[in-house]
Length: 198
Image 1 (tube, rainbow, N blue to C red):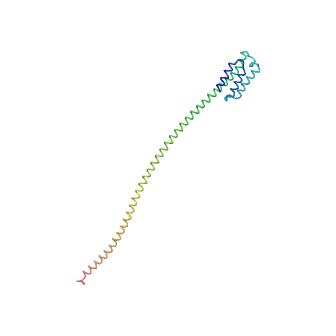
Image 2: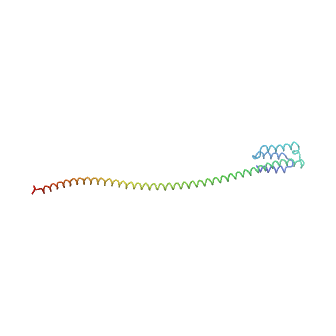
Image 3: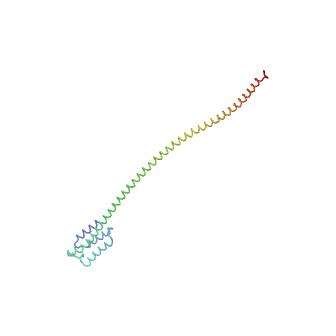
């Protein structure tokens, strides 16, 4: 973590002759840091090991200030570079996360707008369907009423035609009867007018 690196750098800067404490702090930092690559830690250990071989960092006594500062400065510089790199990566990740959060919020707003629009369309369709159903019910009622009136008219026409046919047949029969009566009256007048009746 960045805090552990800061503590390691501070300890290295304060240290005047104890490399064992600095190594222990570096190992602890390496074990908990996931953002620094293995290769970068290996480079820190190589510089530290080289400093021990050359005798510049030994536990047996205090090295001269210039030599100590020179080699420890390299290690401290490398740790500070790693810290800067981690800070940059962290800032970049924070920016990416903020961008993803913003994109998510925009997506949610867009989806919310689509849901509201779909609800509105569904409501309009339901209203139109209800209106169409009402119109169909009214049309069905009018059709039933019109059909009933037509059926009554058809029955009336059928009854009227039957009555007309009956009246026509009765009229024909009366005409035949009257024709026979007229014929009979004509014969009676002829007989009464004849000389034989006188």
